Length: 340
Image (cartoon, rainbow, N blue to C red; front, side, top):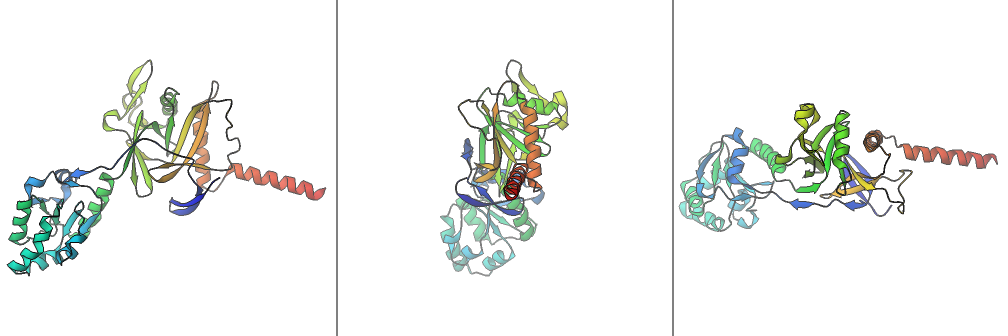
């Protein structure tokens, strides 16, 4: 079983074994420019007050920061890669300062390479602040929204836009509402298996490459834009699942609930025949249920996958068939010994 650790999924604390492996792929931490930020939040109706030359500055952190402490004399507390929010408290503080005091406040901020300021409630900052922003090409944006609404909605949006991403080879399908990631060596039949599942009424998420984003303790899988709805079948070429089977046969994204690895059957390898101990795989630091399924002629892999998903759903309801069988067997053996 190995060392155990605590994880949190589905709102409940549970103890799970250390993951048996780690999913490999290309990991990346996305960044967005201030210009992209403006495009992603049109509902805020933001205006550029200063620093227009710095719209290509990059926002790298999904967390945002209120700049009050920095303005009060602790500029070292600023995280330049975070969006800086200036609300009524901050703007009122700046406006009360004399020209000399304001210059002393702004001088250390000039050197911090801050990505962007966002002023809420339609407030107007003092002219020296805007002059500093133009001088250093620091974008200053303005919205009429209140700070609380901006912080809540922007934080949620940036969490999605800047979430860690793992791009990996595999196929992802939605089976009975469960997000299933199928991995395995090339040419083992991942796409053909997924196609069989689609014919049986399930939905394609992505074929060949899957982009997995970590949102808190949730992993969400999706297809790269160029591959969306498409599938490659050797000997046939590229097909469009949405055109062939209709829009209901595909979905844009799905939470990753189960990872199933296909492996060519090896006679020298011992495979789990009881399923007493659940196994997990680590993806971007999150543990996900994992199964290794050997593939051999005569095995109907798609049916095995459907059963695996149904079994996972039963486990979520607290019904673990293998453990119940083991307990029943132990009870019978114990009863027999007592009678003897």
